[in-house]
Image 1 (cartoon, rainbow, N blue to C red):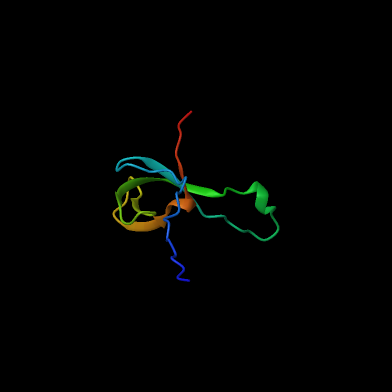
Image 2 (tube, rainbow, N blue to C red):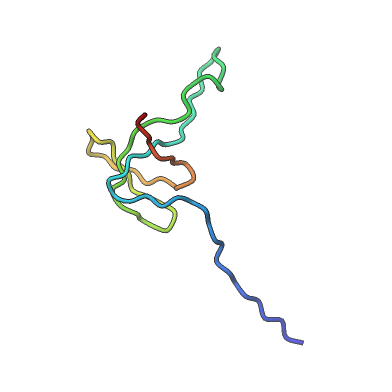
Length: 81
């Protein structure tokens, strides 16, 4: 009997960001003698320049020239209250 394997693309619930959106990046800071859970976990805001792949985005600080590529799982939308 022949087994046919069907490869299904995982349906992700990852958010989609548009160029120009502001996002925060998950970069936990560890400092000796301080409780990690009380330190800032996210840095930013960064501006989305373009979507490089399905899950990676090119980002830039609003006041900077350098760009970096980050995975969508390490980003969250920047909301001004």
